Image (cartoon, rainbow, N blue to C red; front, side):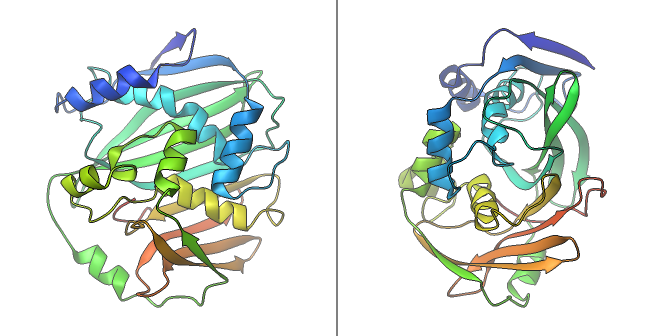
Length: 291
């Protein structure tokens, strides 16, 4: 696979315009990746991300923070002419982050993004977008986002999820309507299903929905101070969080790691299920229906 080295972060405005105009163009993933060297953290941006997601202010980067730094590269890859699917309509169903060692706000690193593992799914086609951060050639962080391109309808998984037993919550969170807009501003992910009630309805949602990566980050913030320096955190995005919402967060120690979940506080419907394990563990089986 070849790599294109960029001299600056891609501008998101033109990429969103390209995304709005894209149609399905092929059946294979691009045989190339993108890389940006010399990435440094903007301290004001990091502080705003921490505020929106519930992290304490500090020098150590949350495991989910490099995801937003890599987002412009992922957008550039997924809106290019050789990417086979239109970005609008892809559903983010799972995400796995491996924090191989702590990252500090003073670190400079290289970010790389590629797409791989195109495969059939009972409801369409799945693929992974993989981002990595490296320092002096050493990989220190990886992020694997799994996307679903739906071509068939099935409610089998949704029905089984609604029948699952719900763990008693450790905490109840009120998620305000502005969460979608706040996270869109700090992450750059301005998909209208998160920011516009009118456009969210056009895509089949009765209200705007929270970003799946905000929900994941909020869970890690709730476990802050109880996580090791190196770990892998895997989540499946289940049913969307309609804004505003009241959700329950549950977390249970599991050996040296954790199992955690977010569900609707009133109905018990699942929004997210996740695990935290040693980063040397193999990827757990994927799951989830929407995110």
